[in-house]
Length: 342
Image 1 (cartoon, helix red, strand yellow):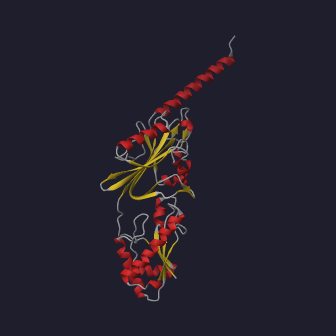
Image 2 (cartoon, helix red, strand yellow; image 1 turned 90 degrees about the vertical axis):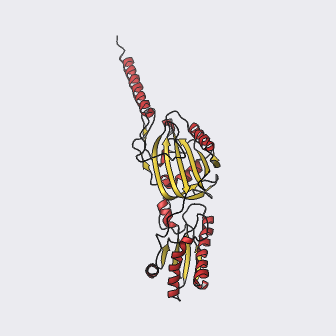
């Protein structure tokens, strides 16, 4: 007599085996890199990995953790670098643990002469969440076609969550090159979900360089119109090194236009207000923005003979943004000095 129940069980077991084999075959296949993505010349990918996400900017700002402290969902006192920035997310072959991937990157970077500045081996989730806040760390990234696939065939979308908090580890180091320090951040973790049996690695490389300047000077006429129409005007022709309050020589053209306006209107009294983005602690940004505002007022008084009593310098850090701080484009807009009518 035929045992139909047993036959049905055999059939189901065979179907599950075939489905599992198909899923494993899909997961084993190396997917195509994101279109236009390319490895940074200094850091090659873990063997067999594919590039899931990529972003390159000729001039941008990038941040690196200097310690474990996190406050208000941000790294405390991060290292901020302006220049050429490359970001990529890789997905490793199935069966390669985040630890194995991380150790290989660590060994390769150390062997290439990079000096470790900071690393996190356990309980790194707060650092990751601060980095990922509002998915800012992958803002503007281009993504590959396809998914992160589990051995059973389940799929996870490629996005900012391809790197996760699970088994996450950070490594940040620098390498002297051409008179500058190249900064590198590695973050390896489980890819998308523990069920994928794969690791994801975020790589960020920043190479300091000077920004092209002289492109955003506001002339006297525009200053006058802005103050009359809005009572304030944002200035992007005043330049400072990251984290410093000394005015750079490239600021001369903008200072001259400000002085011309103030000399043409002797009764005009203004606030000079410094603004920052939200990178770093509020306390340090408050002090920095105040120092920069005072530096501008001081330069106008010393070099252009504008009466100091007509100008009051104030710093407000990131408390009055013009755009979202979630992406670098917004943060760049928020880093400014404003001229405000008293």
